[in-house]
Length: 174
Image 1 (tube, helix red, strand yellow):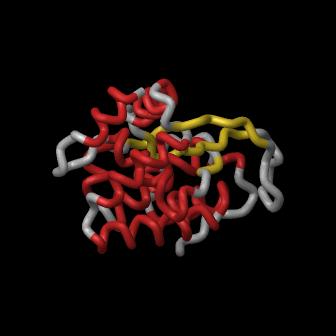
Image 2 (tube, helix red, strand yellow; image 1 turned 135 degrees about the horizontal axis):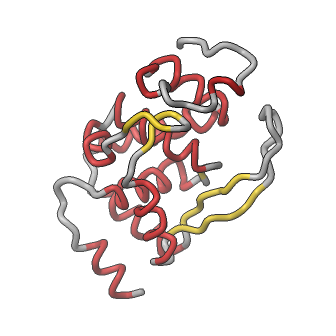
């Protein structure tokens, strides 16, 4: 584990990797958990498109079965879990969600919080504020809220989505 911590603390101070951006997002907004893989991907996508272009550049999002996706997401997540920086916990659907299906909750471990905080500390103040504020707003939307936001504002990323037919209400542009 000590070797992994050194790896993270010595990484280039320029551009962050997908793993590092995922840690930054998980560490933002007082390290509140992210509820569901769909929400995790969509938060990265929206922040990359609207606030921090480096995230968009690193993840290279493309249209997929559930809207925008990145081939870098799952390998980065698997690596973070394997390194003991992130925990995937199964949790029931949240109150107020249309579906009460179980989903994964993504939480930083104590070591993950240490690494995330060191990465966040390296960001310019304006970028820190953007990521904290964006995570707070996007997380408050819930799963269908963020899907609605993404599909309405970035319809070119929803063209292959299987979710469009499952939604009863139309997607509304914000």
